[in-house]
Structure formats: structure tokens, C-alpha cells
Image (cartoon, rainbow, N blue to C red; front, side, top):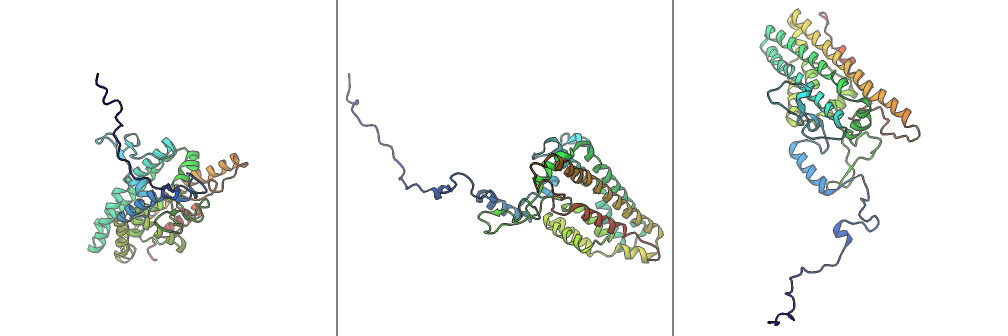
Length: 340
């Protein structure tokens, strides 16, 4: 028997050079170990690519309306109807079925606005061409679209639980600007030394109502305008440009008043009234999903108060009821009178 190999040494493996262990090289803290030293640090592995992608998209590095709603839906049956039962979200977030319904109802509101968006484009062209018949048709279509938006919004009550919205969804989509839980903002590690502050997702980041306001010439108070214009920085750049071009278009209000077209004036006022009614309905929704829900949360959490959870604020950081009421009031004030 050949035993010549019994005493052979095992073949030596090539070992990589041994380097002195350094906790810092592995992002391990001398004081906190594997714990994140400051939980209000977005780690650089997330912060840097997040910021780079956001810059390419022209959006701030935070969850915005276009992320949560505009790009987050699909039809179960592509040939099926535009109904919530035939829609689903692409990405799921905390909040379960209520969160999914919150997104999808908002998708339906955006879809209901499509005829109105096309109508205002025709309306601008009609003003430029002094075509009263086309303008009248555009205004009538805009009114119907706004009314359909209100009907779509009403589905929120059927599918979204107010307490889940208030205690889970609202907090999840809140940002780190005007947020009492994160008053200093959020550090984007590797991007900036100081904390950055961004507003959370908000209905004000939808371009729809701001487009209608621009077309109808509705002017809001200084405080509301400041917030609404800041929300445009959270919109896709092309949508923001659309609003700016609408603002530069000839005044619809001036044309109606100088043209003497009574039918167009009546149709214009009906659009404004429909928009005011939509905003009134939005106030009712907010009262149920934020104000009333906050009251219930207070009664349940008196022994463990949570300032952030109990704030009567919108997800964009506004004192929501005062803001919405101001916007509605200015809408009502836009009603035209023949001798104005």
C-alpha cells in the first residue's frame, strides 16, 4: 500500500493580507456599536443615491404626490372600468387596505380631472381666438369635470378608515418640515452636514386645482400663495411649467367681462361655484380624517401624549383647516358680476 502521501502537508491556500481591524472602517461606533448614533440620520448608502436620482427627476428627495399617487397605480384588467375594484397600487406602504384605498381614490380624482384639464387648454385657445362658442363649451366641460372629481373624492368615506389614516398613513407621509416630531429636519448623510427640511406629500402637490385656479384667475391670499407656490417645487418640472404658462396666458376673467358674453359669464361662475363646492367637501373630509380623528386619539392617549400624532396639521405641514377655508373663501370671491 502506498503511504507516501500520508505525511504530505495540505496545500497552502492563498490568504488575503490581514489588515488591522478598525471599527470606523466598518461604520461601527466606538460608543454605540452597531446602533445608529443618530436615528435622524438618513444613512449615506441611501441618502446619496436618493438625492442623485431625485435631482435627475427634478424633485426633492422625499416621498411626494407624484410618487405616492401619479406613478403608483395599475389596472387589474386593462380593459376594465376605472373603478377602485379594478385598480391596485404598484408599491405598498404602511396602512394596509386603507392606505391602498387612499391612494386609489386620489388616482380616481386625478382621472376625473382629465376632461377639465383638456377643457382649460381649449379655453385658453378660445380666448386667444375670441371664440365664444368654444369657450362656452370648455367652461361647461370644466364644470362637469370638477363635479366628477367631488364624486370620486366621496369614495374616501367608503374605503378609508379615519383612525388608520390619522395614526398611520398621515404620519407616514408627513415630511420633516414644519413637523413637531422632527423640528430640525433630517440629516442626509454624505449630502449635507446640516439637516434638510422637506414637506410631506400633500394634495397641494397635485397640479390639478392649481391649474384650474390659474385658468379661472382665482387669486389666493399671500400666505396661501406662498405655500401653494412652494408645493410646485414638489411637482414634476413639466407640470410646474404648465402652471407657469397658464399664469402667463391672457386673462379669462378680463375677456369675459369685456366681451359682454353673458352665457360665458354664467358658465364661468358655475365653474367657480363647483370648485368652491369641491373645496367645501374637501374641508369636510379633512374634518373627519384629521380633526375628529385627532380628538379620538387624544381621548385614547392622554396617558402617553404624542405631540406629532395629535397635531391638527395636514401632511404638507399646514394648519390645514385655516388654509383650506382661506382657499375656499378666495374661490367664492372670484364670482363675477356683470358690472364688476
